[in-house]
Picture 1: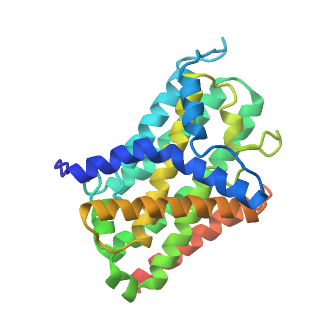
Picture 2 (picture 1 turned 60 degrees about the vertical axis):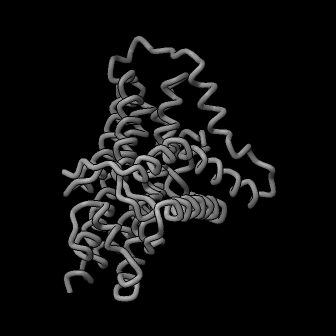
Picture 3 (picture 1 turned 45 degrees about the horizontal axis):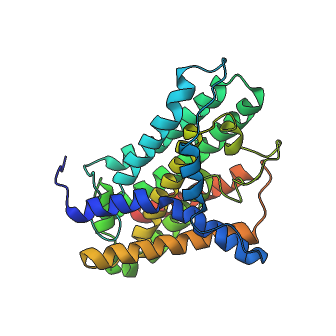
Length: 306
């Protein structure tokens, strides 16, 4: 395990901690622009987090320690996953062979705890959302693993930092189809993992269509703030995976960070555009989308084996 921590890697991680909620603001402002509205302030999530952290939490007598620990552990898992992703050509804050497996399972742990918390409330309504979450995640996780396996095969590295160090302009010249297929898969996984349209609508409160939001209805105060912030950090980490493929050139320490941040903002705008021009899919259509994403990554993997 490489324990060397560069200053640039630490700065990239701190930027992720500070700027992650900004991506949500960019998405919401993009959607507002398409709808012809003024929309929320760009830093609305920061205001919401500050307000929630000043409040107290109310717990039902039905819930136990799992309900209290879920948001905190979920946020910790999201932060660890973010520390594993390189941004702007610099290596990740934490890097070792096989760290891509830990990256995937950090999100798996985050989802597992969210489902446990929903079941801990004893609400059949939240249990319905939990069952949908588990069903869709069983299709999204193989897609992400196949995409990462294709990149491992292409670069010969088992570390995310090593993989993205091997994605350069030569890789785009020799294997553009493979990288485009992997990007397509990761876009689908990003939308599914972050409960965005067309998989889920983070702004809806319609009982029959809620997935992620229904599982966190009983949270309030700081706990709900941890859930919202953890979701923003998760969006940042998934966007960083795509950023490393879209911007393959290796820049200097500061220029690489700047280009990486700009690409993250472009991805957030892209998510906002998708949510503005597409309707949410019927629940029966979501598995087809996720299987299609897995098929893209499977084709990419077969290209590396040919």
